[in-house]
Image 1 (cartoon, rainbow, N blue to C red):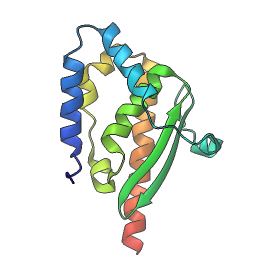
Image 2 (image 1 turned 60 degrees about the vertical axis):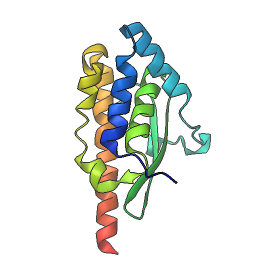
Image 3 (image 1 turned 90 degrees about the vertical axis):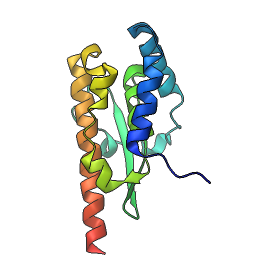
Image 4 (image 1 turned 45 degrees about the vertical axis):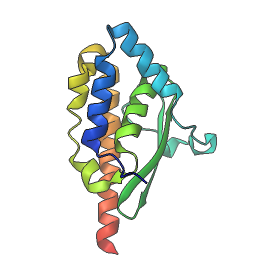
Length: 146
């Protein structure tokens, strides 16, 4: 069984994938495809208490802490945003909470996403990151209590 890839390895793999695409139309299509490949979230989990505040679209995260590791399912009702959720899922899901908390997510800049998404979407992405980092901090806090 292979070791789980590190966040940096996953980021580099995504950067390489995006680099193969010629223009932003293709990159958006790839982002949408990633969103369509996102594991299905149980509709019963799409509740108001799981909605990320600060997103123009509806974005839900169901987050658990398992032995210091952040585990979540997520979904969005927007195709592009769901693609961004899929990227976060790819990089951060099932990673140690400490690493999620330290993630700088500068690779979104490397991908060029910050320059090519609307300000509402970039605010939403920032809100999703804040939501995940808060969950990671809570997870670390739970671990320390045990």
